[in-house]
Image (tube, rainbow, N blue to C red):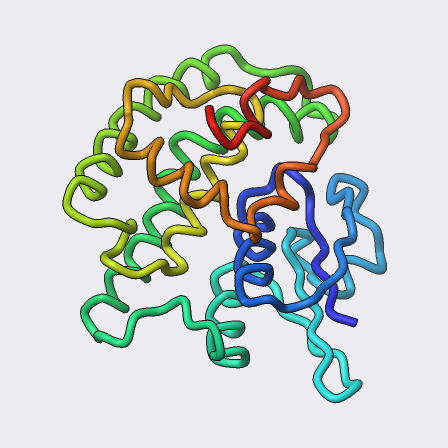
Length: 225
């Protein structure tokens, strides 16, 4: 059986879950407490990070880690519902955006907010650092300006078709949305785009996630927010 080892508010795990669901690939979820550094999990991924995806190819398990590698694998192994454009330049743009979101946006915003409010305590590294929370909140706005600018010209993030780039950004923003950390009303292009994604069947399992000790935003599960 295909399995995804994840942590509910890990954006990298979330984008793998979204793509698997969008491609209508059945899988089971296993919540992995990475802060415990369990030996069985470290055998799957010595880096000790989620997501880890185990595929089942004719009864033979195949293990992958690193979210973008998993997405590229899924695109090649399960091409029936494509999430990469056919045009070469558009494919390059999807990859650029995925890298930009997973690296710059994550480092500047998501890590400083989501990590500080969730994993830091669980990993025994103390409480949230108010400076990091402030810096992450301030850094979010220029990124939303940029994504708004893209979406003024494109129906989807990388062009006219739904791609891996959309699920990558949606996964990251959904972690902030869980905590009510996105000023949607100031960024209507991004809100409209996110609403379209949030209403898709592939997104619905994410809306049932719960994380102990983290207050759920009233609008997180609301499709008309």
